[in-house]
Image 1 (tube, rainbow, N blue to C red):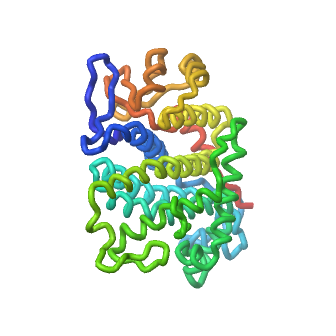
Image 2: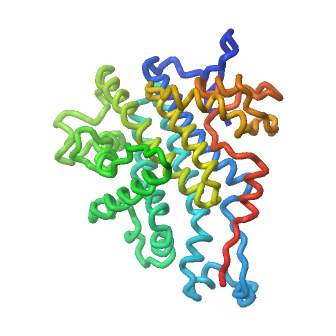
Image 3: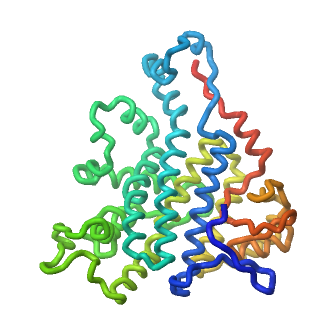
Length: 375
């Protein structure tokens, strides 16, 4: 599942190959975004391999379900809305996430090749639409799923309509999501600000937001007063190299921040669905924190050094190539925190570091406990 082709340096350390069209000053953030994406892709991979979207149901009420009867419809008729939400939440989460990752991966590949406008247009839907539904699913899953199943008009849950007609509701959902993320760990990330996220994603009048660029990237002519196409011009068709460089700079300023928010949002949903133990949540969170700061060129050296010493006692990897677990030795720990790839000790495969670290046996055990009581 490694995303980049590889080249090996003489000193053993493996580096991802970044397309030569991308200026070197952006390489570190591009590697960070691939790392962020890889964790999202890893959660999808595990969901497929272990069938994490499905829960086992138990209860005497199941005896009343007829052979040809839909279980969801049956439970809704029994006013079991909370149980229905628990059943559908994993499926909805992984489905929205799969769609999100398809678009984001192509956006990352395009920016790397210098296709700036295409990369913006591909990032619009996942960050304006999918991300909102993920926030909604985190904060009020019963409300979202109830509207999906019962609404007579899809406009009730259509984000494009909601953001035009009820901005306060969008801001409220973002705020509630940020509050959840900012209280999950003893170390507060401190950078989940709903007003900044709204400004970046939705505010068309914001000079620092993405909305105006997204609209211009998908429309040849725009009429919004904040970025109306000038007479005799067509959006981006006559852009020179200097203009495109400015837009690339904007991409690398904003996208890592937005992807970081989405990553933490999805990890939170993933951990809640699987009921992952607190100790494992904290380890993974601190690893992501170290990697984030490395990507922004602000390394937390004491924390990194501490984890390099302690992590080998608590973590093992599962190789994507040979499917065998291998321990994190001191050497691999050193490599892990400084490079985007580590080397499998069994087959020599260059394994990506962008994973949610959890052992196969522990994942199997957590899966076996995904049971919903219906009585």
